[in-house]
Amino acid sequence: MEMEEGAVIQHGETSVSKAPPLPPPGRRSVIVSRLLSVTDIVLRFLAIGGTAASAIAMATTSETLPFSMPFVRFRAEYSDLPSFMFFVVANSVVCGYLVLSLPASVVHVFRPRARCSRVALVFFDTVMLALVTAGASAAAVIVYLAHRGSAKPNWFGICQQLTSFCGRVTGSLVGSFAAAVMLVTLVFLSALALAGRA
Amino acid sequence: MEMEEGAVIQHGETSVSKAPPLPPPGRRSVIVSRLLSVTDIVLRFLAIGGTAASAIAMATTSETLPFSMPFVRFRAEYSDLPSFMFFVVANSVVCGYLVLSLPASVVHVFRPRARCSRVALVFFDTVMLALVTAGASAAAVIVYLAHRGSAKPNWFGICQQLTSFCGRVTGSLVGSFAAAVMLVTLVFLSALALAGRA
Image (cartoon, rainbow over all chains, first blue to last red):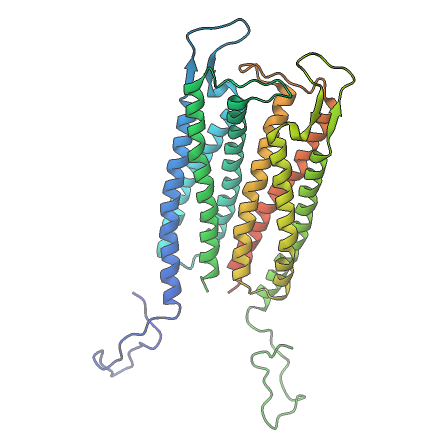
């Protein structure tokens, strides 16, 4: 129970005679901070969904064509390309981190003036943003090459053959880029909460 | 000139009789905040150097081999590959932003309790971190492919022929990744300054 300034009951005074308790200083900033923390939790859940969906969609994709040619194997899996493996690992790591960061985010709803945990979250959110962006970008380059190829180094597109594989890996990028946008927003919300704390 | 708490000269009192001025509350936090702001400026200069060097190194690289084969042109430039173009654009944009953000960073040395500008810097630093990481990652994937190739989609390495080109584009990644690390540190420093402000 909070004891508010200006509401201390003096000796011999009854509780009936005292003035109605005034809102403590900064009550509005506490409410704003709690609202930010709740938004933080919602965004974390969405980012967990995005990264998990991306990692699963990429990791479970494979396609084998019913014909083959010498020197060209028409079987494609995510593990064929290091970029796709990095994408799966990066999304899994970020998803795991986001799950682990949820308790800290919940604590901020009840302790809106927390400082150290918020600064730690800003740091780790920023590192995870870099990781998920690197993964998504690396996979996007390979998806682009698979679709369009590149004339100068004679890298031909493979999506004319592997339509289902290409469709799924392209789709799996969406969740990852969405998670990156959410992590930017999370860092911004934490900075706002830190700025409005005093 | 700052007028400090507890050092107000009363009517009829001489300046000789007053007590030595006490440090105002939060003086230590102001010094720490200024130290953080100076570090911020230094890191911004280093990141400007890193992104500018990366963009220039990539944009000025080209190599033509003294022989050619049908269907294979042995002339390489950064504009041949969209990833390298994105790398140059991303690094140029981030470099431009960092130059423009310097005045705000200098203002923080003299106004350590600034809030809005710090929150704005955190937001834009985070967006720029995502941009420079995406650019560096996209270019790194192509550099990896150029060096090692990829067996499954029949993309052959081109660095056996284009040794000078590959060496320079590989080197140009260093400045970009270093700038990404500095931007993570900048976001962390801003969060620390916001946390220690009160």
